[in-house]
Every structure is written in C-alpha cells, then in structure tokens.
Image (cartoon, rainbow, N blue to C red; front, side, top):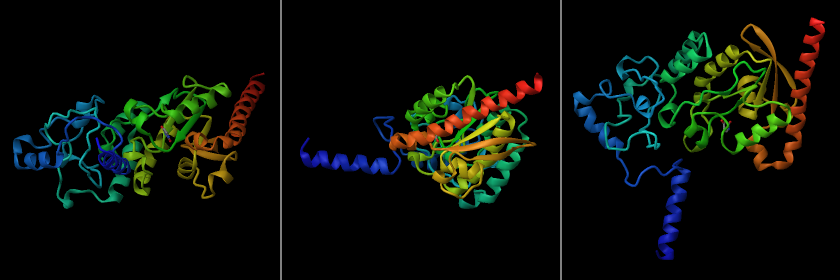
Length: 314
Ligand code: URA
C-alpha cells in the first residue's frame, strides 16, 4: 500500500468513527435500504410476517407488527449491522416507512409513561422495555441494557447510557469505566452482589453520542419506575446527566457532587447523592479524590442507617 493509500484509508476510518461506525462485523457491506424497498414491494415478506429482528438476535423480545404497534419509535433509521444479527442479506431490519406512519414525540413520551406504570416488578419492567418501540435508540443498539447487580441491594448506582462493551454484553458498566466503578464500590465494601446498577438510557446511543433530550425524556419513566421497584436506601447518580435527570438540579456536577438530596422513590423518601462519572475519572484521575470523598459519605450513610436500625431494635 502506498502512503497515499494509507492516508486515504486512515481518513476513511476516521470518517466512519465520526459517523458512529466503531465495530467491524462483516467483509461485505449489506444495503439494507435496497432490501427494504424490495420487501415493501413483496407483501409476503412484510414486516408483520418477518421474524422479529430482536428475537433473531436472541434477546427473546417479541417485536409487535408495525401496524399494530402503538409505541412506534418517532424516528426510524435503517439499522446498521451490529454483528449480533444475521448478515445474510435476508429481510431488511428496518424498511423505510412513510412519514405519516411515525408517531409524534409526545406520543412516545406518553406511551413510555403508560408502559412504565404497568410494571409491577422489575422483571415485568424489563419485559415491557424489551417490547417498547417508542425510542429510536432501540433500533441501533444490539441489545437492551437493563441492569446488573442485586436489585435488593441498599445502594443503587445510575449512569447515563451504555457504551460499546455494555451493548455487546447487555449489562451496564462492564467496560473500562465499569471496572473503575467496581473498584470504587469495593473500596467501600460494595460489589455487584450487594449493589444494583442501571442507566438513564437502556440502549446504547450510536457511536456513544450524547442522548438527545427527547431520548432521555422517553426513557425517564422507565428508570424512575426501576428505582421505585428496586427501592434502594441510597441512590447514587453517576455524572451530570444522571444527576440532572433524577435529582433535577441545574448546577454543574462539581457543585452538586457530594451533596445529599431527598429523592421520592414512589411513596418512599430515600437519600440520593451525586458523584463524578467513572468515565470522567478515567480522563481526570486527579478528580478521583473528590469521588473518594463521595464514596466515603455513602459508606458513612450506610453505617449510620445500620446504627439507627440497631438502636431501634435494641
Ligand atoms: N457509562 C454509563 O453511563 N453507563 C454504562 O453502562 C457504561 C458507561
């Protein structure tokens, strides 16, 4: 390869990265738009008759037929290949639809609220989310990233959205920032058997872009219900987006971190604290001492609650 070719290849890869293409999943490109057009012309291969793309990926989530689905995503993008689905040139994953067929954003938000309200258990909530079609992020994510850890744990950590590792494994905080979170939890006597972990957004935004305000709004009812159903004693918001979404403070994370707030988890008032996101700490290791103070405050709050429970018993 000449140096001009190498330079052009480098530029092309940089372009792909900027566009959110960050995984190699096949040798040959698949034109899903062309396949979609072919399918639209053939009623026998209509989306209602086609197998669910997600079910084909093995997450077990039945996808309702497009016409019967009240929770349709407000926008539908053609789905890029993720590696988990078949690349056999089979039926299109997301055939283009007429604009009139798309639900307006406020309908998706209403549908999310209604769907989240229906869940009586965390398992039900996960199943409802797996069927929910109101958030466009589902179309580009490989799988739903619902939660990890112990839902009966006293502490619940909430981050922003899954990244590539989480998207691959279907579990939150399993990449580099997750490893750091594990170490931080361990330092105060917690781990994934004793704490519960989730995100505001349960699907990876393509290329790890920031979720749009609409995507956050659509996903918010689900995480609120998840916190309510898990019922932790302490809620830890990891980073500014989770803090703003859950605690509603507008101050920056540097002013908000380390402060305790009261959080209404359904009918229960629990304690909530904001701290720095582990991904930020990886970029700014000097800030770890601030996060360490926050984690010590969490440990002290747990000990305090133990002491007063012991006092009440004795
Ligand atoms: N960052 C998050 O906010 N959540 C994850 O699950 C992983 C990285």
